[in-house]
Amino acid sequence: MGDEERTDEFEKQLKAAMARGEAPAWFEARVMNAVNQSGALKSRQGMALPHRGWRWVTAGAAAVVMITAWNEWAHHIALEHIKQAHMDAEEREAGEAAKAKLLLAMKITSAKLAEIQAKVDEAQRND
Amino acid sequence: MDAPAVNESGTKEGVTAPDTRAGFAQLLRVHQAMVFSIALHFLRDRSAAEEVAQDVFLQLHRSFDSVEPGRVVFWLRKVTGNRAIDYVRKRKLRAMVALEDAPEPRSQSAQPDLLLQARLRALIATLPEKPRMVMVLRYQEDVMPEEIAQMLGMPVRTVKSHLQRSLAMLREKIDRSMGDIR
Image (cartoon, rainbow over all chains, first blue to last red; front, side):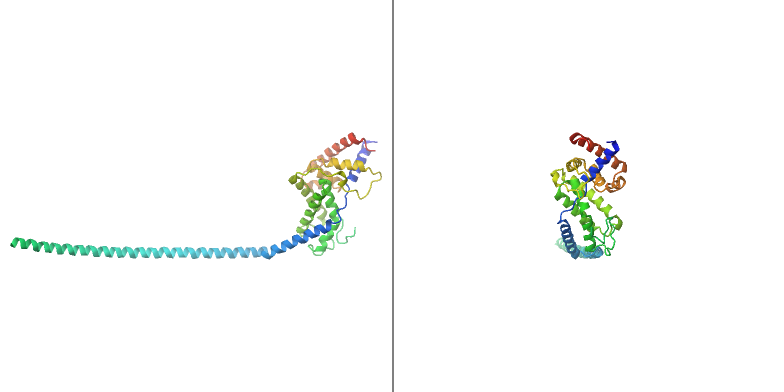
């Protein structure tokens, strides 16, 4: 037998060895069942988020809510800061006023004491 | 085979709505033997072959819109080949099934040598993954090296090299164990 004939015969045997066989009888039903199950799963997932477009709408709405909440919170914080600044200023003004009153009172008291002391000194000299 | 809407070349003729159950079922009916056999000749494990073949058809169902009508067979061979290789790599599957589990040929050759054919299948199962899949696609499906290269994402010269080396190994082992084929 020549080399070419030998090769042909060998490859012929190889093709016969590797010939297609039948799939199991139940294979088609098994695949269709799996397809149906995956379809059911898909539709269940679809009920939660029906369409990619809706996901973007949902994400956009969530972003708007978050931005709005952030703005509200920042506004609230700013107002609190302003209120606090006002309160601080009022307290400072009240303190200043009280201090001024106290200084005035002390000045008056000091003047009165000086006047009394002068009177006492004059009385002692007269004695 | 009675499948009026889908021909053997994979053209989805007459399938009006691509994702219809009937269209997919016809493709499944026509091509299940091819897909299952590629997986089984490669894996030599019936349950593993069923699993891989089922995954291939589920992927086809999911990708039905994107698979070109005239390229269904190419797509199925490519996906089956790559999935079977991945399956082995993930599970480190080795040839572990008795020779009689290999599918029987549909048509007997003029001078059947079933013992030799069983021996050839067993020897092919010992090849590394890529050369083994090259041999399955070449000798089961009669796919040309250029197309195998596209399917498995390797250069044509690598496919040809795998074929030459694998054939040389098979010849040597067959000659040694069974004598010349006549």
